[in-house]
Amino acid sequence: MADSLSFLNINVHTDRRCLARVASFGFETGKITFLLGESGIGKSLLSKVYMGIMPPGRLAIEVNGKPYDHHLAQARRSSRLRDGFFVFQEPSSHFNPMRTIGRQLSEGQLGRLGRGAENTILRAFWPDKNIAESLLNVYPKPYRPSGGEKQRLLLAMAFKKIALYQKKKSAGDALFIFDEPSGSLDNAARNRFLDELITRYRQKPFTAVVITHDYTIVSHLSRHYAGLADEVAWMELLRDTEEGSLLLKPFPHHSFEAWLASLAPVRSQLDHSGLEILRLKSGMSIWKRRFAFLDARGREVDFTLKRGEATYIKAASGVGKTTVAKVIMGLLTAEQAVLTILNRPVPETGKRAYYARHIWGKQATMVFQHADEALNGELTVEEVFKVLSSKRTVNRQKIMRRLREWFGDRIPDSFLHRPVKYLSGGQKQRLNLLRGFVQNTDILILDEPLNGLDLKSADLVIKKIQERQRDGKAILIISHNEDIMEKIIPGENIFYLEAGSGASKKDGGSVPSLHAGP
Image 1 (cartoon, rainbow, N blue to C red):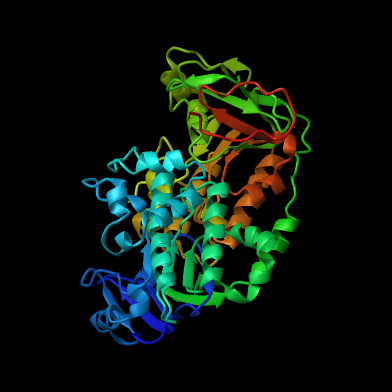
Image 2 (image 1 turned 45 degrees about the horizontal axis):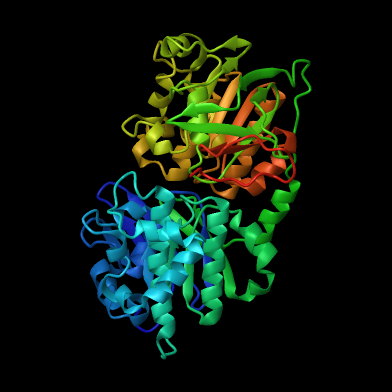
């Protein structure tokens, strides 16, 4: 490990169960590897073991049949690992709330890079340099910087380390691992990251790994970097038949483009399809921000849902798409909102009682973005469905039939008794979605439904969404997977969201620019 990046046999387990076991795990030296696979399958865990940054003693880890301490000693002697950097999935865990952002950007080795080079890197992520500079004196707090800002700041740290490596005259290599770098970014910010990564790589190659479940990255690279094919590796971590056993296999990235090209909108053929089922008047106000809905021509319009149709709200990260959905579901109270559901105006007073009596689980259901926040990890899979019934009972045969539709025929009956906390991220997301689908309400709101899923699972979810459309249900989708959503949702059902005091009616012309207000 000290002299080369090899492929390792890694086994990670607790006293009770195997967490991840893979016979050959590693990355090609001098290439940019995109490591795909469902959330929680073990991509991050194995990568941390590989780079030697997993704290010893927390888990039982073996590398090439030897205790983890042996691999850890080798990793600490590796110059390519010392010169590298690991961008953690949750940037908040990286920042010290007792030091300003600016100070943390220049700590340790990062301080060797001049301020001019740092400004160049910051401008790659913030075209408006005033926004970046305003963050440098901020002490990290839960609400400031935002999740997307923290993500970009951590990426800036990694690119400072890349710049330092590239200044070295030696011909050695360095390993840079980016764990879900676009998790809190909209597509535009994600693409700026990819562009900067490839620009730096072309200046002086290094080994880079991008851990992600965002398969739409394939589309961006195919459109803009077709000539980079020999320098890019596509890999996917998959489950083997044995519990906890994983396989690292090449991912045929062209299959994603073929699958994407095969997608198309569907419409219900029922007599009542196309009838309006919900209307939210544009100009809703909450937290002193005005929310406007625009059509593709930039004209301000009311937001509507219709039977048998899927609708998509499109906006940059942080504008307020989920806020709008929560107002529709009565989970947030707007200062001003005119909302009609099934031709009945939602009252301004007694709203919670109204939603409990008429809406929640009866006319509308919302599937939240983060399964960990939506599901109680202490419950078993069976108990997740029991809480939906007033009698706290379920038809086990029916539930197992639905589970096998979503999880595969090999799911054993004992899966019902598995605690939710022991499921992978992708399994939790499918369970989260299934819980919403089984309620079979006229309105189904899906917040980032493809979050954390592999391509096979994403294809299943889209098929289930389109089945509900054919049944005459109205579907509202919030998603950063623009390439996919624009394939399955017709343009007239795409609403552009703007927020802030500057959100106002457009006179027409091109598709509106999306911003988060002042």
